[in-house]
Length: 325
Image (cartoon, rainbow, N blue to C red; front, side, top):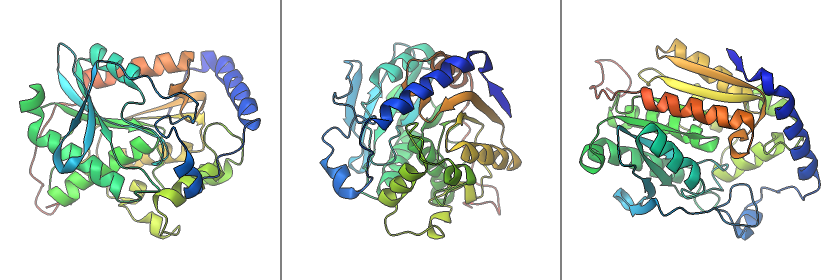
């Protein structure tokens, strides 16, 4: 494990304190389905009073099975990044980070395809994973014709990181596809929806996510499930067989209730035989890349460099006797 950015720890912790103090002045989000449905700006994952800014560079499309995506295509394309947004499976949108995704597209020379997957509670599990898997299969079949490249990458933040791993497992287990995506970029994701120790012990401090908000998100996403049912590998990829997955970059902050999820997943991913870059950001809270911090700019550079240089596509049939065979 490598702890990064300790030289700017004071700035990061100071931001956390100010964020928590401001959050304490606002009513807590209850996490109940009625409250979620009444939110008029679900596209804004931070629950603010202004919608996200849409850039003209993004193009909305409808692909296979009616799944909607938002596409950013720079002048030069060396690969395609399937991006899956976060927001606890109940908030957020494909157009919620246009500026960041367009910047990534230009700097890493990637076509970025962001999935507008269906959101809970109106569409609980498995609706979101179904949409993400459909987008991934569309890229496997159509990326070269659409974007002129066979190099595919996948990733996302928070719930989007969870859905990225679930998508890779679905490709392998349901479609026998190994190596379609050459790398995974996984930022502060929840990988055990029955709750890891860091999730259970984090408490009520409102650093964008905490123990109570995680429980509420899981209840919305998997309303008919108890803790034991949420340990199903189809729901909690930490319990899955991780063999055959691509190299991964896994990032989390030390002040994130999902810290254990990334630590545990990185160990299991590596033990299953794939390369892993694990970055633990000193003092960073959940979702820190949404905010104007030194660690955010550094993380976005590291993300860009990883996605620009990693992940040659290698479609291989399943090995005899392997998962998905």
